[in-house]
Length: 595
Ligand code: ADP
Ligand code: ASP
Ligand code: MG
Image 1 (tube, rainbow, N blue to C red):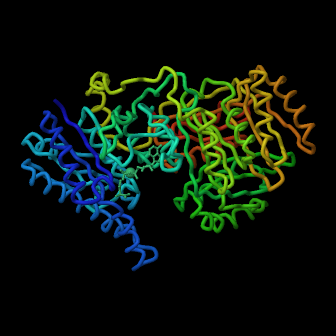
Image 2 (cartoon, helix red, strand yellow):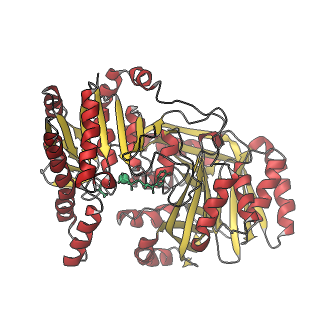
Image 3 (cartoon, helix red, strand yellow):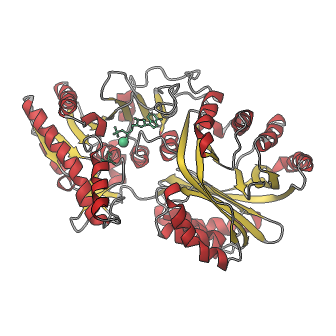
């Protein structure tokens, strides 16, 4: 039998009894004939406690010292785990990230894994040991200790499973598996049997804290099946693999990001450099920008709205004041009392009317959406913070997420060993040689020139408006692809959509009829647009990627008409006249990351 990686999170090793119980799980797997590698997190809330302590002595602790401090949490757990296994009569050796040879870059507190050596672990396993690896940590080229970011032990576990070509990677945690939404927020959430990598990537980055999203990037890149299960019960849990739970389901999960802030910039002088000028200085401060909506007004001006984590609002505004001034614009109404509600599902890429259902359900519940962004497999809406929970419950119910979907897999674990065999070992290894394990990988850079854009300018900013628009489109079976709603002020919002080009006039007619009901709303459109898309792995976690894209397009003098981002794809809409040059620029800039 092969290698099995078992990861235990903080709550699963919070005291000595739990450590002994985790030790027994590893021993059981060892007795069954597996070679066992455990990955262990810091006990309970130890990492939180260490962070608090650091802030008591220094408001802005140096990040190198922070990593030195935080890595001790995991060191305590691995040593205790090895002692526990020894006390039960089995051989075990604990190793720090450095001792294993987990090499990372030097970005302290959010380091990325470059490579992992396997010799020492393999030798210890072959000598009959259970190997216990400290999660969440590595060393950089100066042998300084680094950490991978909060929740990073999941990433250690999946990365180790990839390089060791493990048969399974089991993530033991304090819930029974991956639910349709956080079961601690919505008790009616359903335990899923299976989730696809792409869905889990989106859900994790949209607020489903059960898995560190970078661990799913590893899972997808190296084809590691990830089995999430409870350390406290024997429920089978959920499997994260390539395929979704049910081929028929349009939505498979929902998530909430509670603490967001909305930044609204108005009347910026529109030019190809606008996005670059705004987002580059923010990215330099390592602030992650999320939902982005931009709309061009008639007089050569642009309104731009985006979200950042709530805690970063003040810092973002400070950076932006001089930039906005230089672009002749102003900072509009911003708010740190907003939350993002999202639904995710592979099936929505093919279905008409998914957005319509979400917006209609929210409208029925009288919840106003301040911003909307979509990607092929997710729809996010920004709502008032006070209404966030109700919004999550509303969409969860609308898509029947509490019910098992039709044609769902019944026993995903039965075929697990077959799936693993399908992954030619040689392929995994060749992909690992000499490459940066966690580097950005681009699968494809493409141009879709079969769509048109429509923009509603100055829509009333109240619940039910977006829903009306999408109802009409769904009624006439017009597939709306990209949707972006931009917050202008408390009275007005702009909505841009893309539709199939052959239906442009029909769509324009519907839009104008609707707009006439909402005076002074107007509709503009561009029949010939090009939708440029870059798809791959790590697109959002590599924050510099969007900036590279903005720069490549700005250098070609290309005006961005719409943009949307997801974990696996970034789409930018430009006028068709610029599309080919834009495509060539993107291909040249990302040549190094294409696989
Ligand atoms: P660990 O310490 O084991 O790494 P975490 O606290 O990081 O555990 O992750 C488990 C928690 O993730 C659960 O207690 C649950 O509240 C939360 N969670 C958020 N979204 C989901 C979801 N979709 N399914 C399951 N758990 C979720
Ligand atoms: N101990 C670290 C944290 O609390 C890493 C982890 O638990 O995954 O973030
Ligand atoms: Mg975790």
